[in-house]
Length: 277
Image 1 (cartoon, helix red, strand yellow):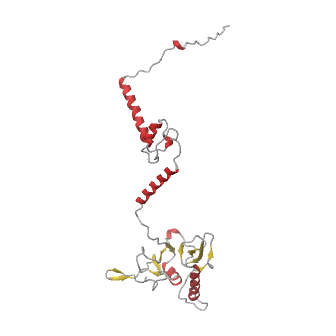
Image 2 (cartoon, helix red, strand yellow):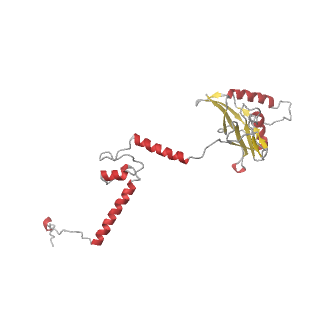
Image 3 (spheres, one colour):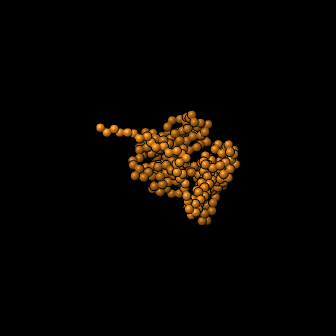
């Protein structure tokens, strides 16, 4: 029967171990030095466009020199604070700089918004807006669109601001340009067929918000016109048909600081008239 004998590992004294030495040719040394230099340059370039916390591996002096060109870091770095967050003053300067750049880019001026209300038919929608809300048409309505305007109360007529005349091909135009118009303008447009069936019943969100001087005064005005224009029981051929149009109750104060009056147009679109409290 053979007996196995374990042989202890041979231990070579450290002093007798062969020394390994990396030997590079002059060409390899030049390539290595060039690679290190290129890496340092790239790192410095990246550092100048990144926050302070990315300056790992650089000395305080090198980090300060690199960060001097960083648009997000405007103060010199100390050996003890180069990783700290920016001060409130630095943040303020950055925000002011960004705000100034945004103002330079925002050269266009917003003058006025003209909302569009979608209806099933221009012909059936016009009576409510003209007779009840006192809007007037601008130009001749098309089969798909009508431009409406209600002049401010200080004008002499619903469509003619006092004192405004603009020559146009030898004629005068009573309605001022929309940019300087003090009245309210809206556009009625026919709802596209691809949107599906028109089923507005006043249950959805408001389609139009209009600021008025006094909601209660408007309420009294609309109630009087409704009483005057609504067909009576013995009138089989009323002059106007307002469809689903109705006043949805008296004006109410809202928790968000407005007093509002809700009205439905002939298609059931919800219109909110309001003034701030």
